[in-house]
Amino acid sequence: FFYYQRSSVPINGVLIVENKDTFFSIKKLLNEGVSIWSGIPISLLIYGEGNKITKSIHFIEEIGVGEEVPIYYYGDLDPEGIAIYYRTKERTSRKISPFVPLYKELWEYKRTNKKWDNQSWNSTAINDFFSFFDDQWTDEVSNFLHQKGCVPQEALSIETMRGMAYGIVKSV
Image (cartoon, rainbow, N blue to C red; front, top):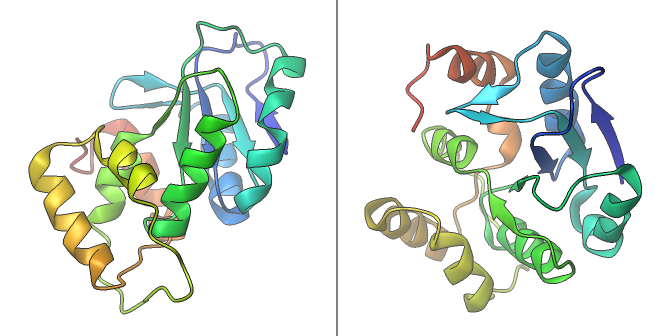
């Protein structure tokens, strides 16, 4: 993977993202000093290159991320994006959890006709993922995914993510 760390800031939170466009948007925000969403600080950003992160997550040890530093994942809201999160989590002894604020805001941008095909439904991965969210959100998203709905993480624009950080956009 490749990564970006805010200079002169200790690593206090890690965010792994699935797609390159999202990586560059969040990198730009970090450079602007925007680094906290819903009270969660991020100072190290990793571009996981989709599924490649599952094979390279162990390199996190080489860049000096302390055991106490929280690690979050943010990818597409579809079965494969959720499976990538879960496979990454299973390949390390580190605790990795979904970055709830971005996923909740992403859900607000589900106004898309994008459908997923050729993805398998990993119940274990999906149940683990949903365990971080409230029941109402889980029910709505589960129904959407069962109808082959997909929300690509790029649906959140840099402006929306900036607004979330400043409390301009409704963020949970």
